[in-house]
Length: 208
Image (cartoon, rainbow, N blue to C red; front, side, top):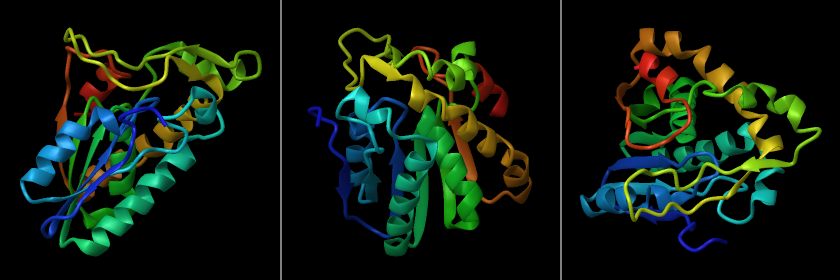
């Protein structure tokens, strides 16, 4: 496992927060946020998504269904211990957080989404289902923070086979957005950060 990629949990009060990291990233990206919330007395869970935090080759054997299952299990466990449960997500983690709200309804009391990834910002993602048969990987997107001196633990390569599962994850999530908004099942805060290169800031801005 890469240094800093370990999952994080902290027992606290009756309010719980599940944090979901992004594609090819690790819990390290959200660790300061998780530790701050824990210091405020909240119960916190920050899982490591399958295939992340080890080798990019491991990620190639996973996909959207695996990543969602991981956060779903973590959410169910957290909600069983807490009176109120919130979900925070970064980039693809924001997409996973939205999907949790769609599936679990009122059990998700609120969402905080930072640059949620809901659509491709490059045609490469749309071509990934075909490219996966001829290309194993593409240059990585980790450590894309513009602020000097910031290091994000992640992969220097993106496995095309794993990326090819993103359109399906985006599709099933966005197809239920209107229904979720009408039902007002959860309060939502969306933060768009222009000082960081992250998947799909423009479509996410429209979703906000």
